[in-house]
Length: 235
Image (cartoon, rainbow, N blue to C red):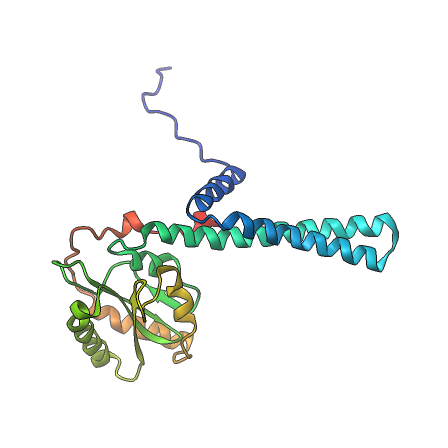
Protein backbone atom coordinates (compact mmCIF):
# COMPACT_ATOMS: atom_id res chain seq x y z
CA UNK A 1 0.00 0.00 0.00
CA UNK A 2 1.42 3.36 -1.00
CA UNK A 3 2.30 5.65 1.90
CA UNK A 4 0.12 8.73 2.07
CA UNK A 5 1.99 11.94 1.32
CA UNK A 6 -0.16 14.07 3.59
CA UNK A 7 1.08 14.60 7.11
CA UNK A 8 -1.09 13.25 9.94
CA UNK A 9 -3.33 15.78 11.61
CA UNK A 10 -1.79 17.34 14.68
CA UNK A 11 -3.35 15.99 17.84
CA UNK A 12 -5.06 18.61 19.96
CA UNK A 13 -3.72 19.03 23.49
CA UNK A 14 -5.68 17.46 26.31
CA UNK A 15 -7.89 19.38 28.70
CA UNK A 16 -5.25 19.61 31.43
CA UNK A 17 -2.63 20.83 28.97
CA UNK A 18 -5.05 23.43 27.62
CA UNK A 19 -5.74 24.64 31.14
CA UNK A 20 -2.01 24.89 31.83
CA UNK A 21 -1.50 26.90 28.64
CA UNK A 22 -4.34 29.24 29.60
CA UNK A 23 -2.84 29.63 33.09
CA UNK A 24 0.59 30.45 31.65
CA UNK A 25 -0.88 33.03 29.28
CA UNK A 26 -2.93 34.59 32.07
CA UNK A 27 0.03 34.79 34.44
CA UNK A 28 2.10 36.45 31.73
CA UNK A 29 -0.36 39.31 31.30
CA UNK A 30 -1.92 39.40 34.78
CA UNK A 31 0.56 39.26 37.64
CA UNK A 32 -2.20 39.15 40.28
CA UNK A 33 -4.00 36.19 38.74
CA UNK A 34 -1.91 33.61 40.63
CA UNK A 35 -2.73 35.17 44.00
CA UNK A 36 -6.44 35.34 43.22
CA UNK A 37 -6.49 31.69 42.12
CA UNK A 38 -4.51 30.47 45.14
CA UNK A 39 -6.68 32.55 47.47
CA UNK A 40 -10.02 31.20 46.24
CA UNK A 41 -8.62 27.65 46.30
CA UNK A 42 -7.27 27.79 49.85
CA UNK A 43 -10.14 29.74 51.43
CA UNK A 44 -12.83 27.00 51.13
CA UNK A 45 -10.41 24.37 52.44
CA UNK A 46 -9.53 26.51 55.47
CA UNK A 47 -13.21 27.19 56.11
CA UNK A 48 -14.03 23.49 55.83
CA UNK A 49 -11.33 22.59 58.38
CA UNK A 50 -12.60 25.23 60.83
CA UNK A 51 -16.18 24.04 60.48
CA UNK A 52 -15.13 20.42 60.93
CA UNK A 53 -13.24 21.24 64.13
CA UNK A 54 -16.07 23.35 65.52
CA UNK A 55 -18.79 20.85 64.72
CA UNK A 56 -16.74 17.83 65.72
CA UNK A 57 -17.69 14.31 64.67
CA UNK A 58 -14.30 12.63 64.47
CA UNK A 59 -11.80 12.11 61.67
CA UNK A 60 -14.41 10.91 59.22
CA UNK A 61 -16.33 14.15 59.53
CA UNK A 62 -13.14 16.20 59.18
CA UNK A 63 -12.13 14.21 56.09
CA UNK A 64 -15.51 14.78 54.43
CA UNK A 65 -15.38 18.50 55.16
CA UNK A 66 -11.86 18.76 53.74
CA UNK A 67 -12.83 16.90 50.56
CA UNK A 68 -15.82 19.21 50.13
CA UNK A 69 -13.54 22.21 50.67
CA UNK A 70 -11.06 20.95 48.06
CA UNK A 71 -13.82 20.43 45.50
CA UNK A 72 -15.23 23.89 46.20
CA UNK A 73 -11.74 25.38 45.94
CA UNK A 74 -11.12 23.73 42.56
CA UNK A 75 -14.45 25.01 41.25
CA UNK A 76 -13.80 28.57 42.41
CA UNK A 77 -10.23 28.50 41.07
CA UNK A 78 -11.52 27.41 37.65
CA UNK A 79 -14.06 30.22 37.61
CA UNK A 80 -11.49 32.82 38.58
CA UNK A 81 -9.01 31.47 36.02
CA UNK A 82 -11.62 31.73 33.29
CA UNK A 83 -12.46 35.34 34.17
CA UNK A 84 -8.83 36.44 34.54
CA UNK A 85 -7.86 34.63 31.33
CA UNK A 86 -10.64 36.37 29.44
CA UNK A 87 -9.46 39.71 30.77
CA UNK A 88 -5.85 38.90 29.84
CA UNK A 89 -6.93 37.97 26.32
CA UNK A 90 -8.72 41.29 25.92
CA UNK A 91 -5.66 43.09 27.25
CA UNK A 92 -3.60 41.63 24.40
CA UNK A 93 -5.88 43.18 21.76
CA UNK A 94 -6.67 46.39 23.62
CA UNK A 95 -6.06 49.42 21.43
CA UNK A 96 -6.13 47.49 18.16
CA UNK A 97 -8.66 48.58 15.52
CA UNK A 98 -11.61 46.19 15.59
CA UNK A 99 -10.99 44.96 19.14
CA UNK A 100 -14.49 45.99 20.20
CA UNK A 101 -15.92 43.75 17.49
CA UNK A 102 -14.08 40.79 18.99
CA UNK A 103 -15.73 41.47 22.35
CA UNK A 104 -19.20 41.91 20.83
CA UNK A 105 -18.79 38.71 18.83
CA UNK A 106 -17.67 36.39 21.59
CA UNK A 107 -17.77 38.19 24.94
CA UNK A 108 -21.40 39.20 25.40
CA UNK A 109 -23.67 37.51 27.90
CA UNK A 110 -27.13 36.25 27.05
CA UNK A 111 -29.87 38.68 26.00
CA UNK A 112 -27.40 40.56 23.82
CA UNK A 113 -26.62 40.23 20.12
CA UNK A 114 -23.43 41.76 18.71
CA UNK A 115 -21.34 41.50 15.56
CA UNK A 116 -17.61 41.72 14.99
CA UNK A 117 -18.01 43.84 11.85
CA UNK A 118 -18.50 47.61 12.29
CA UNK A 119 -21.66 49.32 11.06
CA UNK A 120 -19.80 52.55 10.27
CA UNK A 121 -16.13 53.13 9.47
CA UNK A 122 -13.80 56.02 8.73
CA UNK A 123 -11.33 54.43 6.33
CA UNK A 124 -8.68 57.13 6.87
CA UNK A 125 -8.56 57.21 10.66
CA UNK A 126 -9.73 53.61 11.28
CA UNK A 127 -12.38 54.95 13.67
CA UNK A 128 -15.35 52.60 13.78
CA UNK A 129 -18.82 52.19 15.25
CA UNK A 130 -20.10 48.77 16.28
CA UNK A 131 -23.65 47.89 17.24
CA UNK A 132 -25.22 45.60 19.82
CA UNK A 133 -28.89 44.88 20.48
CA UNK A 134 -30.15 43.54 23.76
CA UNK A 135 -32.37 43.99 26.77
CA UNK A 136 -31.03 47.51 27.24
CA UNK A 137 -32.00 48.56 23.74
CA UNK A 138 -29.49 49.49 21.03
CA UNK A 139 -25.90 50.30 21.94
CA UNK A 140 -23.38 51.95 19.62
CA UNK A 141 -19.84 51.02 20.65
CA UNK A 142 -17.37 53.59 19.34
CA UNK A 143 -13.64 53.26 18.71
CA UNK A 144 -11.95 56.63 18.28
CA UNK A 145 -11.95 60.05 19.98
CA UNK A 146 -15.20 61.99 20.18
CA UNK A 147 -13.79 64.89 18.14
CA UNK A 148 -13.34 62.58 15.14
CA UNK A 149 -16.28 60.23 15.56
CA UNK A 150 -19.11 62.64 16.42
CA UNK A 151 -20.42 62.84 12.84
CA UNK A 152 -20.01 59.09 12.38
CA UNK A 153 -22.03 58.41 15.53
CA UNK A 154 -24.71 61.02 14.76
CA UNK A 155 -25.25 59.59 11.27
CA UNK A 156 -25.60 56.05 12.62
CA UNK A 157 -27.93 57.20 15.39
CA UNK A 158 -30.23 58.86 12.83
CA UNK A 159 -30.29 55.73 10.67
CA UNK A 160 -31.17 53.52 13.62
CA UNK A 161 -33.82 55.92 14.96
CA UNK A 162 -35.47 56.00 11.53
CA UNK A 163 -35.81 52.19 11.46
CA UNK A 164 -36.75 51.62 15.13
CA UNK A 165 -37.85 55.01 16.50
CA UNK A 166 -39.12 53.81 19.87
CA UNK A 167 -36.02 51.91 20.99
CA UNK A 168 -33.51 53.68 23.30
CA UNK A 169 -30.04 54.20 21.84
CA UNK A 170 -26.96 54.30 24.08
CA UNK A 171 -23.47 55.31 22.98
CA UNK A 172 -20.37 54.04 24.78
CA UNK A 173 -16.81 54.90 23.84
CA UNK A 174 -14.02 52.38 24.26
CA UNK A 175 -10.79 53.58 25.82
CA UNK A 176 -8.99 54.44 29.03
CA UNK A 177 -9.97 58.11 29.27
CA UNK A 178 -12.59 59.81 31.38
CA UNK A 179 -16.09 58.67 30.49
CA UNK A 180 -14.74 55.82 28.36
CA UNK A 181 -15.17 52.09 28.92
CA UNK A 182 -12.28 49.62 29.02
CA UNK A 183 -12.45 46.72 26.60
CA UNK A 184 -13.09 44.10 29.27
CA UNK A 185 -15.85 46.26 30.78
CA UNK A 186 -18.02 46.41 27.64
CA UNK A 187 -20.13 43.39 28.55
CA UNK A 188 -20.73 44.40 32.22
CA UNK A 189 -21.60 47.93 31.08
CA UNK A 190 -24.22 46.61 28.66
CA UNK A 191 -25.69 44.34 31.32
CA UNK A 192 -26.18 47.29 33.69
CA UNK A 193 -28.45 49.14 31.27
CA UNK A 194 -32.12 49.26 32.33
CA UNK A 195 -34.34 46.74 30.60
CA UNK A 196 -36.08 48.13 27.52
CA UNK A 197 -36.71 45.10 25.27
CA UNK A 198 -38.02 41.60 25.75
CA UNK A 199 -36.37 38.59 24.14
CA UNK A 200 -38.76 38.48 21.13
CA UNK A 201 -38.35 42.25 20.69
CA UNK A 202 -34.55 41.88 20.67
CA UNK A 203 -34.73 39.47 17.73
CA UNK A 204 -37.26 41.66 15.89
CA UNK A 205 -35.18 44.83 16.32
CA UNK A 206 -31.98 43.06 15.31
CA UNK A 207 -33.64 41.72 12.15
CA UNK A 208 -34.93 45.17 11.19
CA UNK A 209 -31.52 46.73 11.73
CA UNK A 210 -29.94 44.07 9.53
CA UNK A 211 -31.44 45.93 6.59
CA UNK A 212 -29.07 48.81 7.34
CA UNK A 213 -26.01 46.62 7.05
CA UNK A 214 -24.43 47.17 3.66
CA UNK A 215 -21.04 46.40 2.27
CA UNK A 216 -18.77 48.63 4.37
CA UNK A 217 -15.15 49.20 3.41
CA UNK A 218 -13.04 47.76 6.22
CA UNK A 219 -9.96 49.97 6.63
CA UNK A 220 -6.50 48.54 6.68
CA UNK A 221 -5.66 47.29 10.15
CA UNK A 222 -9.11 46.05 11.12
CA UNK A 223 -9.09 42.29 10.90
CA UNK A 224 -11.57 40.80 13.41
CA UNK A 225 -10.36 37.28 12.59
CA UNK A 226 -6.98 38.16 14.05
CA UNK A 227 -8.17 39.92 17.17
CA UNK A 228 -11.11 37.67 18.03
CA UNK A 229 -10.98 36.42 21.60
CA UNK A 230 -11.92 32.75 21.49
CA UNK A 231 -14.13 32.48 24.54
CA UNK A 232 -14.38 28.70 24.38
CA UNK A 233 -10.63 28.25 24.66
CA UNK A 234 -10.44 30.37 27.79
CA UNK A 235 -12.76 28.20 29.84
